[in-house]
Each structure stands twice: as structure tokens, then as C-alpha cells.
Image (cartoon, rainbow, N blue to C red; front, side, top):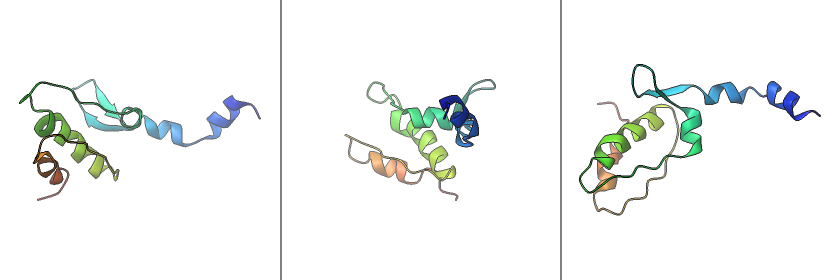
Length: 87
């Protein structure tokens, strides 16, 4: 079978471009970006966990996805544990 024909019959590829989070009026974070992998880097106290980490964690949970969070700082998992919950 022609690989291009197999790809065109697959219905999953368009779903990968579904927007999960609006970063600006123009830019969207999509499922494809999430599947590619996300790393958050920054200095001490720059808001990696409480800012972008918490926003992405909530986005993943609302989309029905799971996540793996590796934290070096005690208490960081508590910051993320409520992300995505409805209060």
C-alpha cells in the first residue's frame, strides 16, 4: 500500500491540529504540540510551576489527557494538583 494513501485514510491527523489553549489572538497550543513534548525552563521564582505549568496542566486535564510532572522542589506537585478542577 502507498504510505501516502494510508495517511490520507487515517482520521487522527486532523485531530492533532485541534487547539487546546489560546496563547494569543493568533497563536494556539495544539494537541500536536502536546504530543511533541513540552519543557518549561526558567530561573528560580520565574513562575514555571504556578504560571505556564499550571495553565498546561489544566488544559491537559480538561482535554481528558494525563500528564507526568517531574518536580525537584517540594510542594510543586501541590501547586499543580488543583489545576483543571472546577470550583
